[in-house]
Length: 371
Image (cartoon, rainbow, N blue to C red):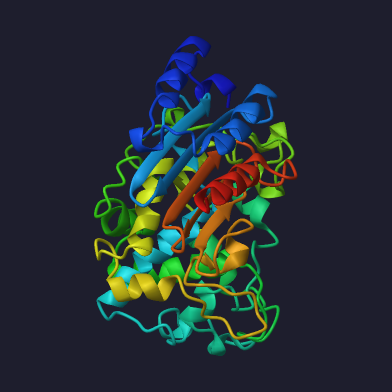
């Protein structure tokens, strides 16, 4: 796919970027978030990052700026693993309806998921990364190369050996989230792309969001800089262009572990549902349930789809912080202690640079939020 498929002309992008850069709340015109903004400005000027958007909401006052080819605060990025809490939220709307309990065994809904200790795996295990399932399938790239649909991924996971006894260890697992999403499809009678649209995006007014592409077009999306990225991104290999992060196949697939598209303000609306539970998507009690730790002492803390605790935030964030990051170069978090939501979306893959500009920008936001 040619780069021009994803990017507007230089003149149009520059004009739009200027418009996006001028959008900020008057109450924050004192420059509170300028240090964070300068991080992204430098990253774009140094040609590390092609596109970025910073969005901060503190005590209800918003601040947004777009950088580089993003052009607008509503630029839509491939979220990577921020997709996980969004898809889990869609699933939890079915929990609110009484369709399942967190302690239900997975095999109750997926009867073929048996043997090798699978009978012990619960829905809670899937959502908190302690199921024993791997992050990615060993034949992940082969499946993508032949444009496999999500049902084929599910079929592979059903027979993938567990790597440890369920609940005994923490191991980040995209495939656990995939099985949880499949249960959501069975219970609702809807595919996950539709379920997420109806249960999360529409109730929260997330008009610049889609699981997969939805009603949007590929050319509307920000291009990922796949060079120096994770193997599943295509890693800049020209032979992977038909299945990499920028391919029409991957953008349409809507993988529940990494295939959501959204804008920074929309992600802030999503986090706001959990920072100040209002019951628009999930019930307030369920919102609070999702952002508390469910793992035993000694294991990495994790909520239902959300990373939780100090480690989920920047230095100085409180133990009540929750959020997620994505390998595509994205980050979002909310800290109830300072009543602050921080969203940093970039086109630079998370593993391409250390420290990553998204982390440095978020650290600057956290420092300013404490002042």
